[in-house]
Image 1 (cartoon, one colour):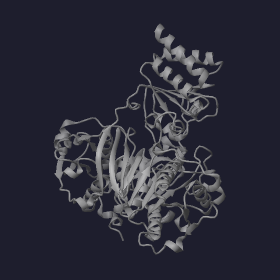
Image 2 (tube, helix red, strand yellow):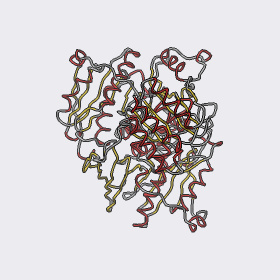
Image 3 (tube, chains in turn blue, purple):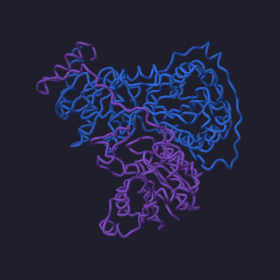
Length: 368
Length: 266
């Protein structure tokens, strides 16, 4: 029987704090804020785990300001740049020693490389790319009341259940599923960036955050890959997450993708500084690069205005944009699910309607 | 030298989705395709085969009809296929699946010069977990999100995509690499390949063949044994109170612009 099955020995909520070039990531704040909520539900402590090169620990106390009771810092030159082998070994060593009940990791390209490897080594379950987490059963049923069509009162839930309930889009985004890991610990989840809310920073809590340093036990033989270079793309990445206006295109542009994208660009510019987003169909077809993608495998966005042109609106896409302040949808199919999420729905051809909208926005701005 | 390509037959999630009473996907009632990222993995393997003449084996876990997908991959250029199939394996989560696949690969033998290619993630689950977990179970180094691969003997240089750029990672065989679609443009099946694909071997590994593999812990496979379970699946409620605009395109746009201006949105 694996050690991970002695679940009563595990306690505490842990968050992996990812850093790049020694700087903590914005996702770390989201995860620590969420971890605080979970630790309070479970009546336990919240611990951040930070790995990096010499000096990385100087930023650790900041996480206390968002809710961490303690930061465990592992500094080693072999941890300065992420490698699967070094990070997996060190994290598994620390977890095997200290036995946290929950371990959260940001679902970045690094977190999604690391998480499965760590879970497999620790012999425990991992839920990918979660959008919502609960431990307390009352909070979970409240969540179901708001976010599902489940008739909560007709279901008998075990209100004493203390498994973390991890909710994510499932089946290609056509449904949502709540996953549990009842037999093994730690219960692990990767969490989508941009979904969870950040707590307000509290300097007094940051000052009170305890720091524990742990030494890495790593030999050259442990490291089977070598990072030759890390390159920041000079190509301008699309900043969907920071955008106030997003005009997104879907499969509806397929009869003339270039013309559809140009129409979206013109509308985005008319609104003033808007950017062009895309559904998965569009990035899969290669009409726009993956950094434009909104939805389950892309980004979660909350702009002031979101215009969906020719996007049918599968749950996986809606999950990435439904919290936008104002949603305008244009689609030839009046039954398209996107209209369920929209504040304004226009049934028609985007190639005809988008240019008209561009002109209307321009004249409204000129008049306004 | 042998390259294993792990592939998955997935429901075409752009079509109708059906769900069983226990919350799992009703795969039988849906149209299936080869997972798109896995096609990039297959192409990566075939390009190395074009240069070195190595053996390429397509491996999948799934119900018996998944053999058809293996035949398609053979028609693309793979030398043979392996179908891991058994009732006991059904309903496995990523941890359970990776144990079974790793057990099967170990059963087939992973040599010093061998490579395992996987797609980054499958479109039905979007987890990206099975590749790294197979690597862990086989105790092999991994490189995920591969967008370019250069091979020189036993050494591979892989461009690994990050959100804000990339890193170049050097790794030696045997290793596991997960591929993204930016890596290449998968080739089509050839006529010759289609004509010959049923003459090439597809081995079936069932529960009986794999149950004694040390990498497979029989307590953590299948629907019941998987570490993670579906607690509940549900559909989100419809957001109400949206407004459908009426009239000609110009009338709809005018109405929209009027309302946005009234709300000081524009």
